[in-house]
Length: 490
Image (cartoon, rainbow, N blue to C red; front, side):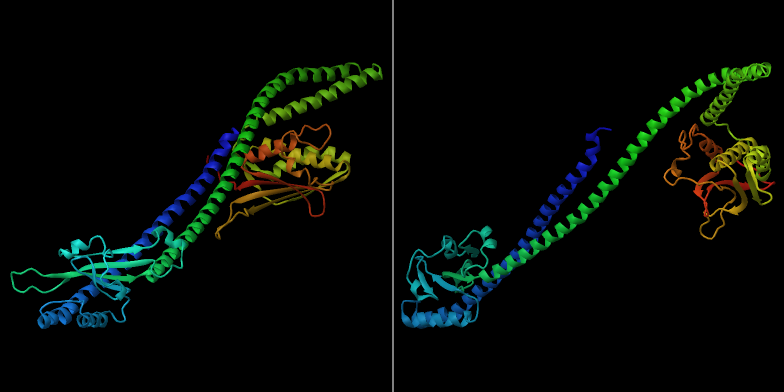
């Protein structure tokens, strides 16, 4: 697997996390501006509605309390007369008193200021807004927000100065028709301005709160997402590492299998000539009993080495080509007795004592010959580990499997323990003793225990290696138990 292929999923996850952050930020900002803009438009619309109602009320009050009585009394309206101006001023101020009105103007048909809450504006021209002509012609009026700074600069200039944002409403000052067929007379244009800077600041503050909360929530969501992606990266990296290990093990196993086939073929070809060499050396030993001692030693060495090499070849062939076990009813105790009987003479010569503690009726399903070889190898290994006089304790029990769960009893099994009085296993190498070709003994093939494990595993069991509580090596063999009336179902 190339390095680029290994980095691809991880870099993709990191890129995804940053793209998600960008998406969350943009969507959050867009949503916050949409919400805040909606709130601003609602607030300003209410301000405009209030200003329009105020203007309509002013129009009604001016007409009823000033215009109509003045016309009836004087025949016409002349605001240049102090008495009429003061009368109008009293009416206007009685209506707008206590209300947030910055300035009130009335324009005549010459576009000059006929009335103003600020007397300095009286008679001045050029102060009327551009659409005053439409209002004087009887249009419905209009409203607009006038600001001294661009709207986009407002959030960066808080607190705002007074008069920064002003709401201006232009409305026709109308009278009442004189008859059913007469039009509504227009007496002038009424301009009302309100300072809404404080309200605008509150909208900006609300907008800022929404934006900050959206950003904080975005960062929090990104943090959670980033943590999840990091965890996914770790899990992905671990799985990729495991996959690489499995691939390496698979390639190694394939090479070992191929090598095993080749070596097994070679070993099979060696075994037949080796048998001829061994039998020939044995025959020559018998025929040359009266020859000189040197020749006898050479023939003895040839025979012994042929026997040892033959055993090594047989071990390798047994491991490389394991035999499928039969499905017979096997008495484990009887097989152990046969193996111990065969080794009794050798154990006596070396001062090895065997203690037996076997329960009756230890039955399993399997191959008696293969189990005999497994027990034989374990006993021989125990005797070789002691390297002199000692004791081998053989225990056998039928028990329930400790893997019982939910209150249900486990499967019955036969547990055999072989404990010798030797130095025990080296803790540094005990985990490798079941690996093929690994051996701490000089001249060993490293196939003894792997062959035993292959036989036991082939019978559905397992083998465990550890040191005894009081020293010595402990080999535990566990096999599925059966009774004389049970049969195995494949």
